[in-house]
Image 1 (cartoon, rainbow, N blue to C red):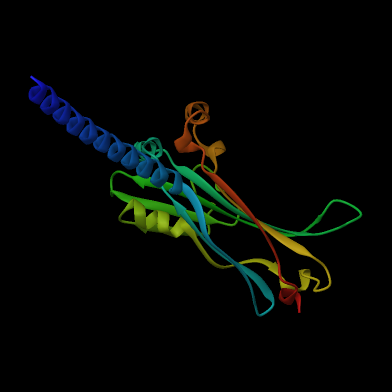
Image 2: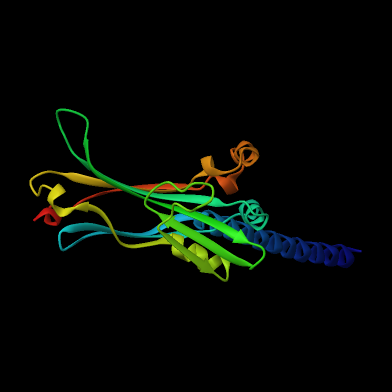
Length: 214
């Protein structure tokens, strides 16, 4: 009888240890997935570089962006989606609020064309109307990732004249990128406010080197 009891206790202890081991493994896997999700937001600024090229201050940025299912579904149904990149240069003033010395903006309109099964991207320095005809650049893409890659990256974008930067003063540049939901049809504007997929925005402020004005 004692042998049977000891044997049952050993088997029970082994099963308990195995169960605990599996439980720890499941917890670690869940934590790993949670960390992975936390480290991959739908919108992330991966590059921001300010340089002087001849007599211009230029900005290069790279935004990692993933569109949610709700946005992609709306695009495929013919709803155009708008994005805005904005850069503002401010001069520090200890005696008053900082002064804006330069600003630039780029507007993007992305739309899917069901008849051709292609993506149309319009880029403009001014706000784009519903038809997108105001844009100074229009491109066609075979796939959505190709179209998004043209939105994600700004290269050598002029945001100010070098003469605007006094080397003896302190300046900062604020870069913002966002989805402009005010351009959506009214029913989408109402529903978009409470959905994470439609609330894409980021902002980053950096100090400018005095060498940019020399």
